Length: 94
Image 1: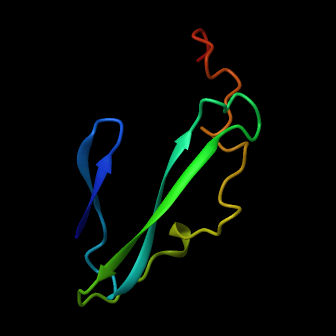
Image 2: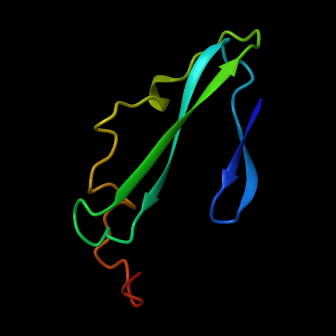
Image 3: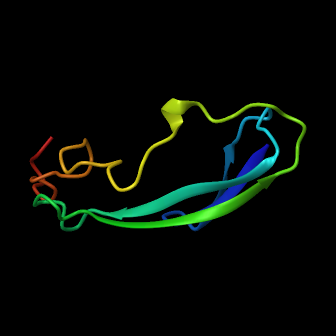
């Protein structure tokens, strides 16, 4: 099964594969935009999350893997890769 999402940067639609064995029920799919313009200091990254309700009516029996689940708050840390980058606007930085 595919879920169609709008890709903001390209203003186009994209699709995401969801396992075809997913058990029938209601799910929440969390997606977000992360603003990094202030990520040059700890705590500067801004998160704009939203959730979509996905109703699956298939005959599958699968459930999400525990490794794909997380708790909020607490899913992110300022020290995670891509969230804090002190050289964000340094053109000579790697």
